[in-house]
Length: 373
Image 1 (tube, rainbow, N blue to C red):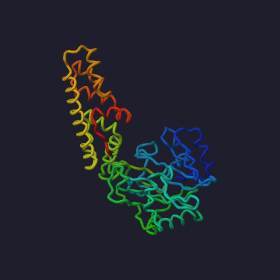
Image 2: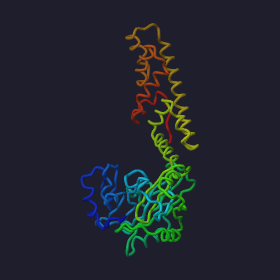
Image 3: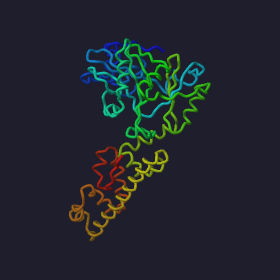
Image 4: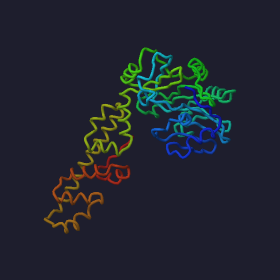
């Protein structure tokens, strides 16, 4: 596989013109071209495969070229296990579970960037932007053939699924800006030493087929997966099933509306085994707070209604009892008046209103718990 030559933003713009799956974002001092979602033909064009956070300077010249888009084994026709020859020379590296970071020099000043530029993650990763790293990055990016150093930043405060005890920067690759050529492993290892940081771990080849390797990758525990890089230019990746399941579980608890829905539906027990101890404890704490809050509110609601239940007809109940209640409780009062148990009424109302954070906030008085993640 050869990568397209890109020297100027005009080499890329025609390939993404009028496409909603890609964005061209002018950041002032530089421009970012990235994909925001994938359509069936998003990456049929080799140029669009390069639009994964590629950067251009104010004058349109290429500024930085991070990884091209590559796919999971089995994701596309060319990455089906039967189409991959594991007897061809290749290397296998660990797929770290952090944030891709690359170096760039903007107006002569070195910095780190993510796919979308100088984001919060990039600024936090700059805790590792030492003089040695800045020096080596300057040599790479200002040389005869400018090249982009690509890193992975992992940290306790940048956790996706895998928990890392310390903040660290790992050199993954070095890529020439114009022709997209990746430096050989031995060369990248030397640059990592000069920067004073680790190079991504390589794994000894011990599989004769893509199917065997995929089975091995899916069975790993405590890691995201692997990247396989063939000398022919083909790159593929494989993730562990344990990681994929945990990532989905992690996604499910990122937003309060999701975790509240799990609590109300009794689905917490299915998620807890997929979370690490800290996350599982946080979920249990929130679930307990929700359940206790519902019970407390149900008791208080019943006490008010029972105390004022003097055989009122519906109209008198509406004018005498209901106005004393919080607005979020008033519809429930009529359900309870009609014979629905207070706890059932509250739970059903919450379940019907946890499709957005706005709804969750509006009905928080029914339980009082807050999801702190």
